[in-house]
Length: 232
Ligand code: DC
Image (cartoon, rainbow, N blue to C red):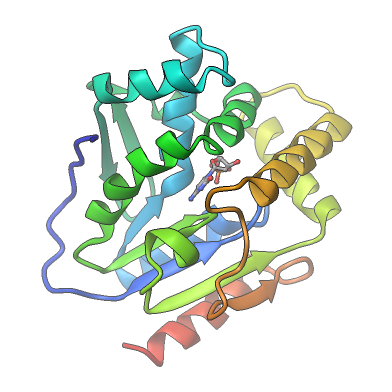
């Protein structure tokens, strides 16, 4: 199992789960919500990305499930969660800045379909959220990682809108990539995330579904704050 470093958070507070497909704005709203509440922001996608990074650097094919499973016990993963950004240390090295490339995104979606990878990351995520006071975002937070979460949201948005958001982020980060390519990558990743056998991307039955296609970020966060405030 991976090792996890977490700042002390005092008494048990709420667990807030935010799930949804790529480019839907999960990270932005989860980060803002965590900041306003003084909660930890847990970016679970970064953990899958870290495994993908390791697979890539070990020169393994994403289809080689046995070799990937054998790599996991030799890997330590530490996540230093802050209210704004989660830093990921793999075998002691901070790889946070190397996790958001298109190549790692595609590979993360592939390795996340491997049951051994999901099982290995489950206790890592649960340990970080054990004390509560956490806003966790991902694909299976409300269904699998924290089915007992106090508040659950499932964000949705039109594929065109999501691709536009993701393309803007990539260009701002200095990647030279065509919009059509970004859209193809994003919808391909979604199809894979939704159709995998283990913990697919689906809304939890008790999650509030929010279509953010034409909702400004501030409106989404204000709505979430109101829902959370009623539970505090
Ligand atoms: O949220 P993200 O784009 O950083 O996630 C990268 C990939 O990791 C995504 O395509 C699917 C996978 N993932 C997952 O399967 N379960 C999660 N809780 C978070 C991410």
